[in-house]
Image 1 (cartoon, rainbow, N blue to C red):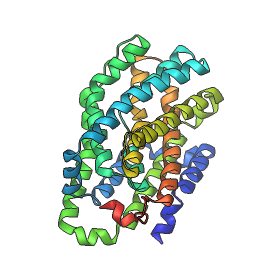
Image 2: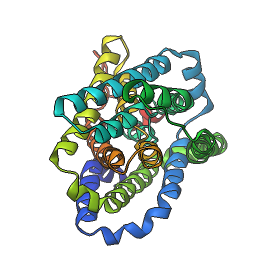
Image 3: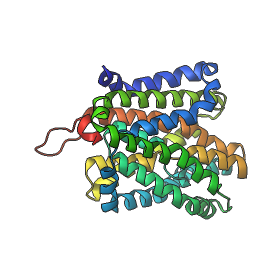
Length: 317
C-alpha cells in the first residue's frame, strides 16, 4: 500500500500546491510548523542510514568536491545568464543571483532519498556547501552584483544543526539500535517524509499566493529555467565525469535545489522586497520540480548493463 502511495508523490505535490494557491487560508496558519516538518523528514531519513554509509562517503570525497564546485559555479552563472537573456531588472537580477549563490537546500536530501540516490552523500554535500556558503555567498554576490552583504553565520549554522544534523544523527543512532525493525517499515517512513514535504510545499505556496499572482510570467520563466539548468547540468556533467547514475542523481538535486529561504531572508534584509521575489517563487518551484523528477527517477529505478534495477530496499542501504 505504501509503495503505491509513494509512486504518486508528484501527483500529491502538484495537487496540494494547486489547492494552496486557490485556498491559501487552509495552510497559512501552519507556517510555524515548517521547521517541525523538516525535522520529521530528516529523522525519517536518518532511520534508513548507518554509520557505514557516511564512512563510505568520507573514503570517497571526490563526488562531494565535484558537487559543491558545480553548485557554486553553475547556479550563480546560470542566474546571471538567465537574467541577462530575459532582461530582468537590477533588483530581480540581484534576487536571482542570491538564489544561485546560496548553498544546497534540505529539499535536496529528501528528493535524493525518494529518487533512489545516495542520501549520505547528499547530506554530506549539503553540510559542506553550507559551511562554504558563509564565505561564498557574499563573495559571489559582491562579484556579480557589486555589493557586499553580511551572511547571518551563527543563525544559519544553528538552523542547519537543528534541522539537519541533529535529527539525522538521532535517526542513525535509532537505526543502529533497531536496524532489523526499521527495515520492515522503510516504505512507511518514505510515505511519512512524502506527506511532510507535500505539506511544506502547500504551506509555502499559500504564504506566497499573493505574490504568485503579481510576479508575472517573465520571473516564473526565469526561475524555472534557472532550476532546470542546475538539475540538468548537475546530472549530465556528473555522468560525463564518470559517476554512476545514483551519484549523478544526487549531485543533480544538490546543484539544482537551493536554500532559497536564505536567499529571501538576505534579499529582504540587505536589498529590496522585489529582490526577494525570485527566491520566494524558487521555494515553491524547486519543490514541485524536485518532486516530479524524484518520482520519475524512482519509477525508472537504477539499472546498469547486465543488472536488474535496484529496489527501494537496496537503495536505502
